[in-house]
Every structure is written in structure tokens, then in C-alpha cells.
Length: 373
Image (cartoon, rainbow, N blue to C red; front, side, top):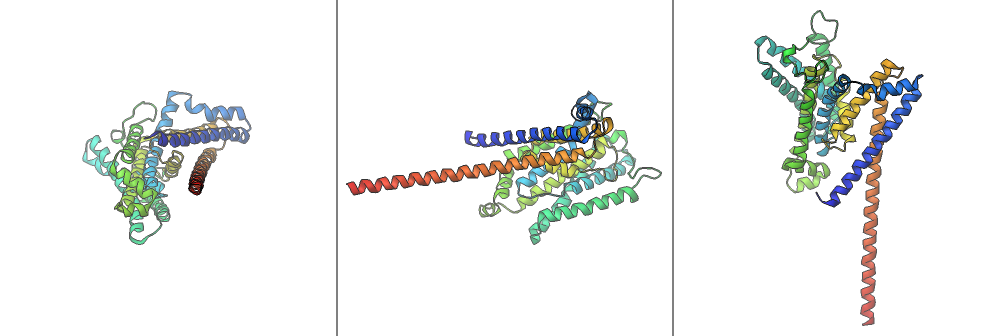
């Protein structure tokens, strides 16, 4: 990467950091204004999620499925595919992993094999759901944004019905499937906290996505397809590159669902995804579709959720406060990106204008020299 490439990238990172800092200021103002006990609300929101090792580990665990969805969203966005189906892909992944564990438990399969099969089933389920949108675009020109959203909504309704009725644990007061046996859950890394192997698994997914995008031919083809599909087709890049990125995005969304079931939740529960797909998409946008930058962005979103929960318990802050703060962060980062793009276009146009002026000056000088001669 040249110095010319590094400068715009560092400038974009600085704008995102400034926007997130502004979002924190707005979050503080909102927490203070929305509570009758502003000091207590501010402490609960900003400090409580870091008050103990247990709280910090829980924050990291809750960031894991968000990061997995964000890594998938980065792949799709780089290919020019706006995947709005992350929530449904996570839901079918959660169901597939729970069904796989229930099927393998009576066989006495080894925990390593059972967990691997559950993760694979979840990734496959999410990939199939995303592939349907990619295939519809490839075969009929259907808008991938619309089809991914509609398929996701249908999948969520079907999963909620299955978990709450057909596959519901008998005699349970919860709308949930049977609890995953401890032996078949992801290993706990810091008991008694909820931190599990979901955290390193999601980090590995983000690093793999980063390697694919930056270090492989497939990543270059994804980038070119996302920037200009006509140019990509002209140089021989198959449209299936875009479909493949969309399918991989769905696989990571399905993996996020499995991390919920085998990690913090321990079972498939109706409505358990709780917006993780939308959070993942927002994190990817805030991170500028960079899987590595998605790591701190996912932790930031997890912090907002944890702070809102603590604020509702300790003070009188609404549990929905995190949604407002996430929206503010996304808005500010998007505005900063748009402003930076407009500034770059203005500088480019100004440079072209100066170049034309210089060319005109050289031409006029040449004409004067010719007439003098």
C-alpha cells in the first residue's frame, strides 16, 4: 500500500473515530436527559459494563455473534450486495444447530464431533438462505436487497413457529427447545462468566474474511465486482463471484446463530436472535466494510446494549436506549463517510480544473512563442 493509499484510509478512520466519539457524547446527553437520576444513569451506562471481570467477559461474549454477522456483511457489501437477511440467516442457523445437537445427543457422539456438525449445519442453513437471494438475482434480476429481506422475514416466522410449537420442549414454561447438554456446548473460557469459545470463533471468522478480501484473488474479484460490475464482467470476472460472497455472508450469519445456541443462550429460544443480524450490518457499515475494524465496532455495540440494560436496572433509563444510541452512531458515521466522499470529489474536480488551467497556460505560451518566432 502506497503513502497515497494510506492517507485516505487513515483519514477515513479518523472521521469514523470522531463520529463514534460524537455518538458517545450524544449517548451521555441522552442518558442524562432521559433519567430522573442522571448521575446514576450515566454511571450505570458507562461504567457498570466494566465494573468487574464478569461483566467484561459477558460483554465480549455478547459481541461474538454480532462480529460473525458483521464479517459476513463485509463480504457481501464489498461485492456490492446489500444483504438485509442477516437476522433470518442467524435464525435458521440457530435452529439448525439446535436440531443437529438434539439428533446427535442420543447417539453418544463425541462433543467435538457434535459441535463441529452443529456449526457446519448452521453455516449451511444460513448459506442456503442467502444463496436463494443471490440465485434469484442471477437468474431473474430480482433485487437482492428486497429478496434477502423478504426471505429473512419468512425464515424468522418459520423458525419462531418451529421453536415455539413443533420442536418446543415438553413441559417447559419457555417457548424454547430442550437445553443443550453442557458437554455439547462451546467450552467456557472464564467461568462463572458466560465467556465461551464463541468469542475466538467469531474473531477467527473476521480474520478469515479479512484474509480473503486482502490476500486472495477471490478478494480482488469481490472488490472489483462491488465497485463496477460492468468492468468486472468486461475483464472476465464471473457474476458468480457476487453470488459466492453473498452465500459466504449467509454462512457467517448462520454461524452467528449457532454461537448463540451453543454459547450464551444454551438452547434455541423463540426470538433469540434479538436483532443480531441488523447489529452486524450496522457494525459492518460503521467499520467501513473492514472485518478487522468490525472487532472494536462489535464491542462498541455490545457495550451500548450492556449499558442500556444496566441503566434500566440501576436507574430508570429505558432498555430501548441502546437502539437510539446505535442509530445515532450509524447516522453520524454515515454522515462522516458521505461528507468525506463529497470532499474527495471536490478535491478531485479542483485538481482536474487546475490541470486544465495549466494545460491552457502552456498552450497559450506555445502560441505566443510561435507568433514571436
